Image 1 (cartoon, one colour):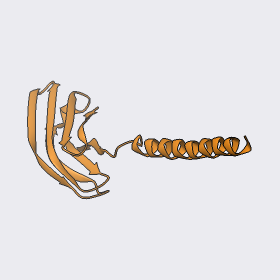
Image 2 (tube, rainbow, N blue to C red; image 1 turned 180 degrees about the horizontal axis):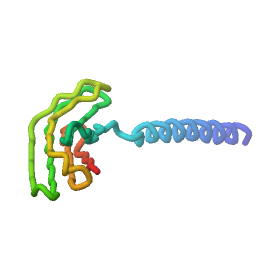
Image 3 (cartoon, one colour; image 1 turned 120 degrees about the vertical axis):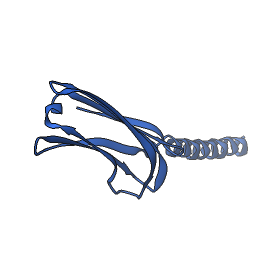
Image 4 (cartoon, helix red, strand yellow; image 1 turned 135 degrees about the vertical axis):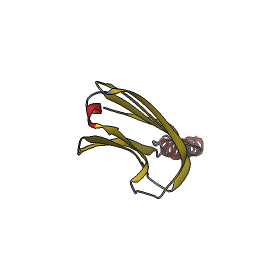
Length: 128
């Protein structure tokens, strides 16, 4: 009887270790995936507004971008779409493209940057 009780205890310990290791493996798999960061830098300068489409990868990656700018102010309406490919070095800000608008655009524009990467999927950001 004592031998079978010992066998049951050993089996329970082995099972607990296996479940703990399996649980740990699953928690590593559930860690958040790395992404691409994007932002639009808006800089007023000499009666102009400079919009820079910026991206940063946490590791080297490639993909495509689409930068859409719409402005409606007292001087008129402007719609601009630029797109292309990008290559990001790890942990380095990159300017993908730039759009310069007249100064009346301050407070009267909407910009959207969309990045697509095979590794990280799609990410978008807007300004303002």
